[in-house]
Image 1 (tube, rainbow, N blue to C red):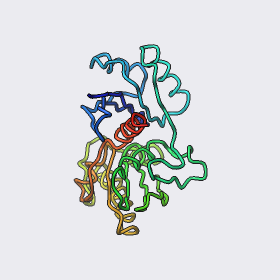
Image 2: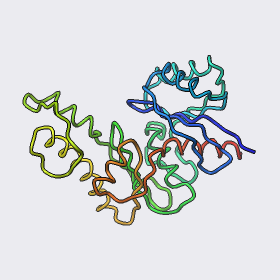
Image 3: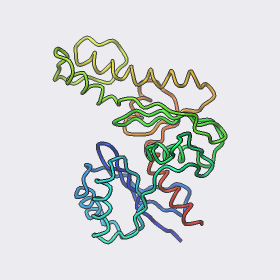
Image 4: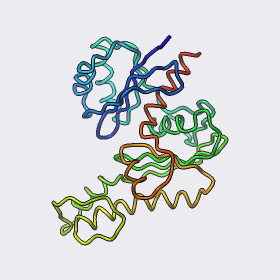
Length: 247
């Protein structure tokens, strides 16, 4: 018997969603992405003829948007919507924050999925609008983390807050020194991202690297070696749904 649920990851710039079979440990059908509006998500769900399933949601968008999205889903017939924050302790993962729910639930779910059914020290890196690095001990303790601007935020900061860094020509992702303003900026922001992760790896040499998020493949193409898990947040939601089913 298969039991499906709808998992939704509301990020800073877009929404990712998938239908998952929660009778399997982590099973995602095709992962879809749409703009970050309630209407865009509903249109996507209708277009793909998604049945009325239980919904498990992660969001970093803020409470007003979350209410709008949940109410829109409920008006369409998705009555069971679960949107829980980060926990103090969950499946052996121990939060380091004094107030657990103030940690971004996306980071928490990524760590939850990365260490599910394994006992090893981890560096969980999510490459999106922000670049986050979370350090998890082998016993499940969150040892702390780092939050940096993502590469697009760094690029926008340079063009917004400087007078002479202007460019319109595209540039390939590279760590080589640039020979045009566009290439210098592109190489610089990726050098910062890769350098931050490499320094974290150097400081935590026994921790295994797990890379998630839309920019994870770019970091691997630029020389980082780790486990490629682009949809960790969605996987974490599936695990929560699976545990609830078994309870």
